[in-house]
Amino acid sequence: MEGKAAVIGVFDGVHKGHATLIDILLKEASRMQLVPFAITFDPPPALFFNPYFSFLLTTSDEKKELLASMGLKRVDFIDFRLVANKEPEDFIRDELIKRGIKLIVIGEGFRFGHKRRGDAGMLEEIGNFTVLSVKKECFEGDYISSTRIRELLLLGHVHQANILLGYEYALRGLREKGIGRAGSVLNTPTVNMKASEPHKLVPADSIYAVRFGSSRKPGVCYIGSSPTFGDGVHKIEVHLLDGPPDESEEMVVRFVARLRPDMRFDSVEALRLKVKEDVERARRLLSLS
Image (cartoon, rainbow, N blue to C red; front, top):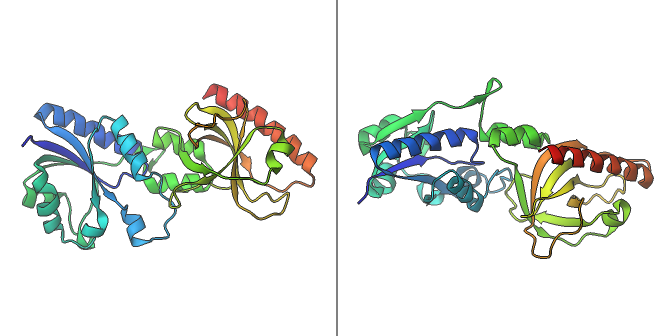
């Protein structure tokens, strides 16, 4: 069996802090002539402990895709339901030793097993692995973490979140039939969508400059409940700036910048004028990004 090098973690968001771990893994694996791969968990621990958790940054498919883009072609997903209450000693024997691992890279403070008793020292002692515990990355005086990124997105600060992620935060969805108001009021092709993953974080109610679909068409995304019209229905609408999408277009919105918060207008005409400003500003921002 070929010797292997593993990076272990939850990797929600696969952000710049995770990228540092993976970079170290790849360099050390090359030096030690080991095969690098990632070990993560499905469902994520947060969702296991709270089935109503709706703040995930990445689905399992997105996680796998992002890790592959960083050079990890193999990702092992361990069923967290089977290991959540497993003693850390048993986790090491049952899940790690059998994989032929020689080197493990983890983030500083990584814990595992029942009551989070497992740590780097236990990995070294029981598994006889070489363990590299990597300090957390900082940006502007605070740690880069999934929690920090969630907080930014829930405030609508998508540009700042993207800096920590290293890419544009994306929301995939299913096409939904709208009530036909947005396209006629705004005179733009409009796509109504519903997030396809109910546990994934939807950014704060606001208006955003976005890129839509695999062709990355420029657009303005509205997330909110249309207070001007008072229908109270929460929706995600994407107004495309350069024509309608292809029927085969992937339903994905990539958030580039927040334009403004959601707000109520005194008239439809006032709303129309404001959206015209939003569109002009979005075009400028998207041409620069």
